[in-house]
Amino acid sequence: MLEFAWPWLFLLLPLPLLVRLLPPVPQSRAALKVPFLEDFRQLQSGASTSAGGGRAMLWLAALAWVLLVTGAARPQWQGEPLPLPLEGRDLMLAVDLSGSMAEEDFVIGRQRVDRLTATKIVAGNFIEKRKGDRVGLILFGEQAYLQAPLTYDLKTVKTLLEEAFINMAGQKTAIGDAIGLAIKRLRDKKGEKVLILMSDGENTAGQMAPLKAAELAAQEGLKIYTIGIGADPQADFFGMVSAGNALDERTLKRIAELTGGRYFRARDTAQLVAIYDAIDAMEPVENEKRFYRPVDELFYWPAGAALLLSLGLLLWRRT
Image (cartoon, rainbow, N blue to C red):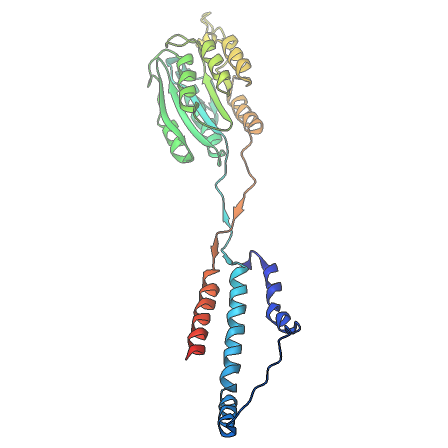
């Protein structure tokens, strides 16, 4: 689509006519004597034959003026609207891979599955919805590893989560180190930064205490949502208590409080789905699409044509 950045400059088009309508400047009268009448007649006949050329020069000069004003009005060609990339938040997902995640206390499709399998399914669906956000993945057990850096490639992040397995990072749980790694990866990022940390145990490994890591996260503006995963401990027929009693809810709650986040408890699949839906509602994706039109400046075409016409008229007049 052709548009003009300064269309008001077209008001200058009648300027030459206005100048011509101005009263002439008074000049001193002078007498002209023509001693040779025949020479005067020859000049008169030459002027009549050049009248057609004068009109042509006048039209070319008018065209040059129109082109010059058109160039000054800055003609622009605006292309088709193109969508701008969505600017969302930086969201890191930290998943516990310690040995206790093998506990089969979740049910999906009437089939009992372990905690990690349920996490992969529910968290994977959550990752798919985060279009517009950059998502990263941290896997932690005895140590914390960056499995996927922050990226818009959500499909790859989901695939890397699905490929994770229990004890991949060791049998123990290093919650503090996982938070510390997230702080390191998000420290230089601008905008809103969020960490979703899932664990079914207590901090039993690592170099950084969880609460100390949470204080550092609060200083860096990192909001942490913590999820305690696993069914409540229950005694079986022989009086044995399930592994679910290792969950340190107190620490997870405190981590969320220090960073302005929130603690959630997932005892079954339905609660885990509801938790991710709640986080999705509290940290909505930027859905409003924005567009821009690429603009190409065209002023040099009419301006260049006006310059060439002016040079041609100048040479014509001299010859």
